[in-house]
Length: 380
Ligand SMILES: Cc1ncc(COP(=O)(O)O)c(C=O)c1O
Image (cartoon, rainbow, N blue to C red; front, side, top):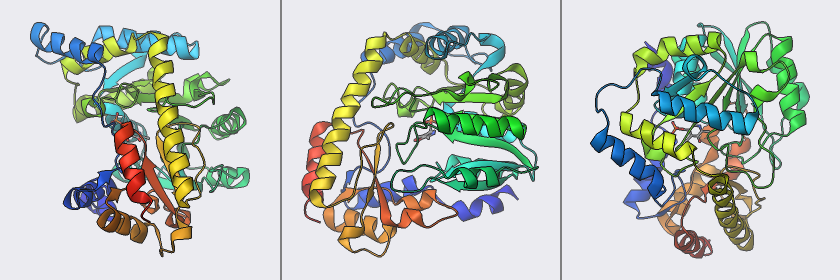
């Protein structure tokens, strides 16, 4: 039974922490959702569609205007021209794109290279498909991988590697040398790269490199993303997969029976969002950069070892100076006695125990919330 394979994962760490945070009325720097609502022009487009467009099943692979908007944005940011109807699939969030990819492409017993700390959908996706994860650790404090460890993770049964950059929870944005090595190994071992790029626009002066743009990689890359993080509408669960026709066909085989389609108003809202001017994306970056700097400085002032992330909206801080046995104990104390929720990152580690001395704080919160949380954290 698949449920048996999923049993070790239990409830998601986000569900557990959110419930505990609620119980103790803690300020939530745990789950990665913005504390504000998405831009009006995006919500207006969805509202218009809800009132004036069809409320019946949209096409299974996405409405034409959204496929076109995704293709246009991809051309601007990668230089690659794609066929929207054959190479773009609209999904119910990046989560569904991941599930459809794992289920549509993998056979039981196939191996998948995952970097740890790993976003929980990847090991769960492997479990759903009966595939076996091979973990490569991003080592603290700079969260880079060791080339020998990465090479050793590839073998005759490897079929896929998942590359999440900008990375949750470390905030790493893989550099060109790292991406090139991954690309070379994919080609050497005939492996497909699945990239999770949901934080693609949230980088702080470091270039976001798309795997699909590296030599020889378009044919073996599925680029997954969504509008949740880029447009502060994480509840919309509207995402997509971009890739060559054979890979797209595999994920579509699963997608059409997993969700079949994604709500029409959200697709219209997403299409409007992706037509935003470049200034929207640069303002998003500066807004997050200011929040990042506030949080990192506040945590350092209290005694955490914390470095500024290159991308995404999390800080992975070292809590060892406070004397707790591990991250779970630290977070339990933080929620119940200090009134701030954070995520214990050991939940993202499977091979090493490096997560035990770390704690993940999300800074996708308004200034007042961040300041209030830091005031409480100072009581540590
Ligand atoms: C790395 C990563 N991938 C995917 C998701 C989920 O994306 P979506 O809401 O579009 O399903 C998240 C959400 O936190 C994430 O951090």
